Image (cartoon, rainbow, N blue to C red; front, side, top):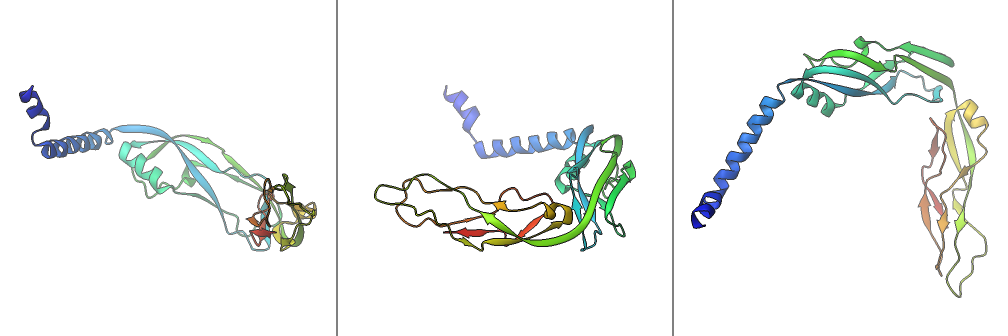
Length: 214
């Protein structure tokens, strides 16, 4: 038993270092093997004039199956390169752009080839005039105050409206923005919260982003 314990625990630090080095050598050799992997490239729209806004859905990523060594593919995943699409000079309306293998940001990742494009192969965008308007906020209060306390039904919003910027057609149909529900269960004092409007349409931005509820 003492012999076995000695084999296991004598020079334990040296043995752990040797184990780690052996693991690193194995991983280095393993990741030098050819491999394939489906990689997602986030889409970034460049060159959109300040007077215009995207409108409607936009694919988040373009996917492709790539071939390279394990190291190359891991390095690519860690850097997360974006697929840039320029819309400089466009006007309001529909915009279409075919996505080809040459559009993938692989120039800095030498040795990686494209096995197949998964898609989307066609990027379709809706572009609208950018507009801004003040939109009123609607508060929601749920729950029952604690014993001996009562709520008078009054809610103070600071500010009571927010400036929303986004596609003109979307803003034309935006009557109000709802705030997250404020819970007053068991409370006997003034409830204060700082929240962001819910249900903000795509490509819209509210200023200020947070609203105080009293």
